[in-house]
Amino acid sequence: MSDERRPRFRNPFRPLPPASTDRTVTTEPDEYVPLSLRITASYAWRMLFIAAVIAVFIWLVITLKLLVIPFMVAILVAALLWPGMELLLRRNVPKWLSIVITLLGTFAIVTGLIWLVVWQVRDQLGDVQAKTRESIRDLQEFLISGPLQLTEAQIEEYLQRGLKLLQDQADFIINAASAVGGTAAHIATGAVLAVFILICLLADGGGIWRWTLRLFPRVARPATDAAARNGWATVVNYARTQILVAAIDGFGIGLGAALLGVPLAIPIGVLVFLGAFVPIVGAVVTGAVAVVIALIYNGPIIAIAMLGVVLAVQQIEGHILQPILMGSAVKVHPLAVVLVVAGGTMIAGIPGALFAVPLAAFINVFALTISSGSWRTGEIPEGDVIWSTVPRERRRRSR
Image 1 (cartoon, rainbow, N blue to C red):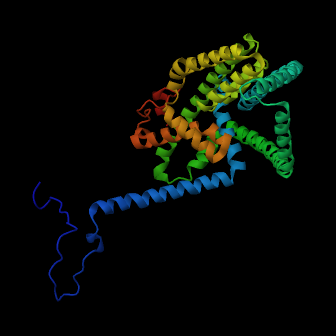
Image 2 (image 1 turned 120 degrees about the horizontal axis):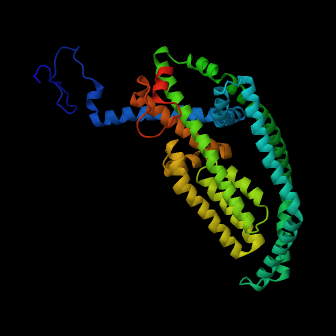
Image 3 (image 1 turned 120 degrees about the vertical axis):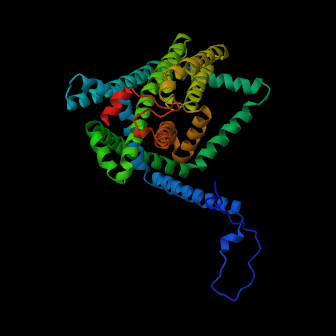
C-alpha cells in the first residue's frame, strides 16, 4: 500500500501544536481521550441502550401479563396442534373441519386425563386419608421416641403455636383468598382469550403474519420473514417433541408407581407429564414429589424403588430420547436451559418457566438466520439448531 493510500491515525497524546495567531485553529476534544477508552465508551452506551430497551419490554410484558400469557399459551398450543391439522389439510379436509376435529380431539384428551385423575382420587381417597393419619401417628411416635425426645406436652405446645400463628395471620389468609378468587377469574378470562386467539391462529395464521410483516421496513421484510419462519419451524418441532417426551416420562413413572403399589399413580403420571414441559427443572421437581408420596405411604424401601424408577426414566430421557428426538428439533445447552428457565420464573413465575425455552430457541434461530445470511438462499442455518419437515428445495420454491 502506498503512503498516499495508507490510513493515518492520530495520536491522542501528541503535543499540542505551537501557538498561532490564527484563532480559527482548534483541537477536537476527543483527541485528548485515549482511543481504547473511546471504544469502550461507545460499546458501553450502546449496551446501556439495549439493556434499557429490554427492560422496557419486560416491564410491558409484566404490565400486560393478562394479555401476554394467553397469547403465548395460544401460540404454544397452536405450534403443538399444527402438525396434526396440517396432516388433515394434506388429506383435503376443509380447513374449518380440520380446526373442529383438532380442537375437539384436544379437548377430549384433556377431559379424559382430568376424568382419570378425579376417578382415582375418589377411589383411593379413603385409603389415602387412613394412611395419612397413620403416617402422622408414626411421625408423632418418632418425635417422642426418636433422637429429639420430645414429650406429648411439647408436641401439643408446638401445635398450639402453629394454630395461633394461623389465627394471627387471619387477615392475610382472607386477603389471599380474595386474591385467589381474583386470580381464578383472571384464569377463566385468560382461558377464553387463549382459545379465541388459538382459533384465529389456526384459521388465519398466515394472514395475520403477512399483516404483521407489513409493519417492518420493506427492505427488511425478506430477512424477517425467513427468520420468523425458521423460528416457527423450531417452535413447532420443539412442542411436538416435548409432548412426546413428556408423555413417555409420565407413562413410565406412573406405571412404575402403579406396579410398586404407590397410591395416586395416575395423578403422579399426569403431574410428571405436565412438569416435563419445563425442561430439567420440572422433571426433578415432579420426580421428587413421586418419591415423597412413596416414602409417606409405602415406606423407605418402596421410596428407594420409586427413586430408581424416576432416575431410570430420566436417564432414558436424557441419553436416548432427548438426543434422538430433541436433538433434531432444537439444541439448547443445558446451562442455557437452566439459566433461561430460572430467569423466566423470576420474571413471570410458572408461565415464564414454561415459555422460556421455546422463546429462547426462537430468538436463537431468528438471529442465526439473519446473521448467517441464509435467508437469501433459503438454506437452513448452519449450527444444527433447526430442523424442518419441509425439504429445502420446496422451502426455496415457496419463497
